[in-house]
Image 1 (cartoon, rainbow, N blue to C red):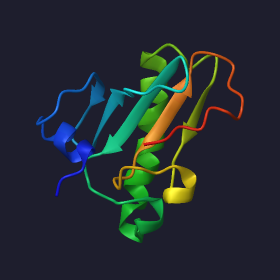
Image 2 (cartoon, rainbow, N blue to C red):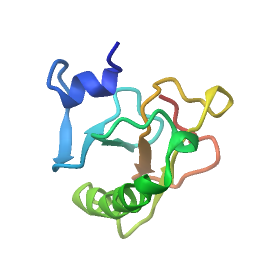
Image 3 (cartoon, one colour):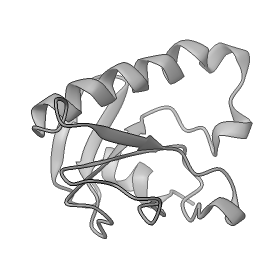
Length: 116
């Protein structure tokens, strides 16, 4: 069964797309926990960070570079932003498809955890 993120990537579900290329897509989170809350999702399906393999190293680094591009596009690169990866149930992971939360647009305390 496809995850919600695979269905968004495959255009089976709508999403507010901020950025897209051949390797990833960035969308606005539908349940934001900060003024700015985007999700960066690799098109390659990796269930979670702990499932990544040595061959995924370049993609993982690429996602961090894209995070800065998306932060600039959203106007939060200069004021600061947070990148979060939830790994497993105890971390708040609810979709088994690796993704990064990009938070900003306001001073962030530790209450800004990000789920999904």
